[in-house]
Length: 598
Image 1 (cartoon, rainbow, N blue to C red):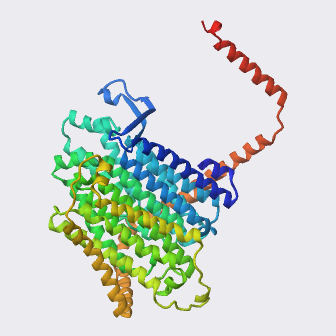
Image 2 (image 1 turned 180 degrees about the vertical axis):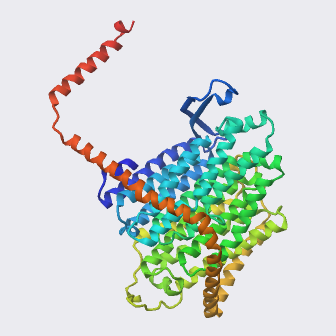
Image 3 (image 1 turned 120 degrees about the vertical axis):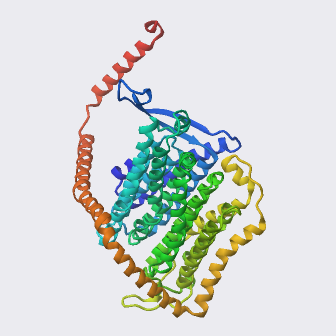
């Protein structure tokens, strides 16, 4: 489907229609697989040999042949993650019919959306680390090309280069972690790698290094601190592209962490919880710091993205508890749905009010009600299920990280909602507030549907049978008092936002402006060193790739398409071809006839 859209389609409507066929066809397959596995506990696993290369004739037997299989595993959890990916794809495609109407090269835009969906599904069902990294790498390239689709806009181009440059270190880290595992155990199939680690004896240093490298890869693509810049800085990109990248990468990271957590736990047992503590500390810092960054921002897209990453960090923090890995993966999927909904809603608001600054917006509840209503719905979906995963057995500092992250994220989302929904919409030069009209239905309803689905999935956390269905383990009923305590934290953040908005809106605006200016000064001082060591070399590499590699590849592809078209237009000798086909069929029939066969 990607090749058909990219090579054979020129019209915008045709490309959009073909792009919708891909998730619909995948939805049929996922529905059939999910229905067959709905009441069964054992997963379905299929393995098909992909590479079988002889690499040596001496040494340990496990290193003499490099074998990689294309593995597919269907469980209750993977079915749920795949369904979330398909819902995100359909919502973004529906929003893009009107929201991406001004995008150049619609075939490229919709083809990359389809390719990103395929890579997401591939990571979710894969059973081999090398197979996972192939889909991971293709998804990274597709994300970069998708965010750079509006190449005529310098701001969008810079944001796309950041999406290639900033996570490059984390992608290489993931590759290095996989390489370390193979260099020690000679196996990358997860089902065989974990028993092999036990048979070959403990190797705490190599296993700990590999675990940390893999976690760095996941942290970078999820946008946790200090890698958040490739998402918070991608605001100038298309709203549909940015929403798709956030939603799909959240699901990709959820699938990766769920698969590699046995390796992380084994490394923790041998290295005294070093990889797990590193992941938990990074997630805790991100859960608190990134919502603060959103509160200090006047850009509505950056504020929503930063708060969403903060809640995703809380879900990652839940991964450090081995008994709640499946619930943490589902919670991360919920954050992917909600973040996609919020990003699509803010994309509609920015397009309708022609500004991304929150202090220049207003009257959204009167002029763009459906788009504004998706913001509190997404916020409720983000914070509703965290309390169930958090539980009551945490130490006080993890409880503090959970609570601060929840409260600040709720405050950030409600701040965006209140400031875009109710204040007076100011008149600006070249902008008449009376020209603001409600967004098209194809842009208004996808964020609402995603928000409702995310909220329903969050509420399902309070049903122990649902948690037991995801991981085939018994889950006792939770304490309602404990749930009430956890729900009181985001409710308190929402009430604080409402009080500040009602009592001292001007003071809050001045505080936000001062905080934004202070953050820019701090970020500028720290950015000088970071830019010189990391960002500038990576951006130079990205710029050279765009200027040298991509045009050459596109020219070669264009030449191949033109030559193929010329070959198709040539007149064919129909009668000789038919005679040749008939002779070939007669020879095949004679060879397989019973007398000749015997």
